Image (cartoon, rainbow, N blue to C red; front, side, top):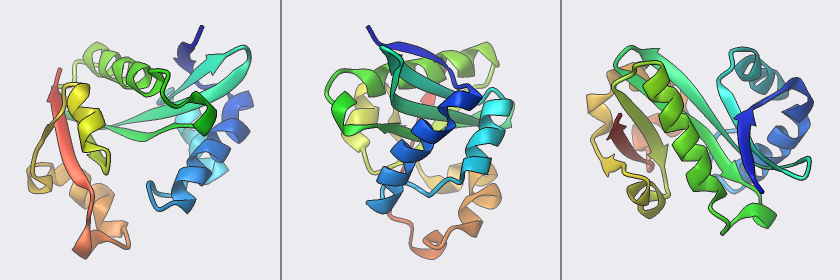
Length: 153
């Protein structure tokens, strides 16, 4: 049975491998081991685990009391099609509620998946906290092809 839990230092290499595979495909930004470690220390990263193996990962970044972002959502190939991605999203939504944050943002290529999780399409311009903190530093800033989606929690 897959369980979702907060990531621990011993998970860094498994998380890095999953994220690296997605980054190689251009589906998410690369994350260093140090960045992953910082998110773990901030209790901002979760993993999907079964039988001591990590199958998926998701992180949360809080911009302010009104907005958080689900980041680095990824499931390895052997874990795909088993509902792990949905469980990770549900855990990040729960975390967003616990922190009393109004809405959760995702920049994604996976629109149908996030629609099934209750998100709807929005304009990036309605999320200046994200744009001016992260997007401005991205190589795709002037030609971003990701879709902004949001869910109110």
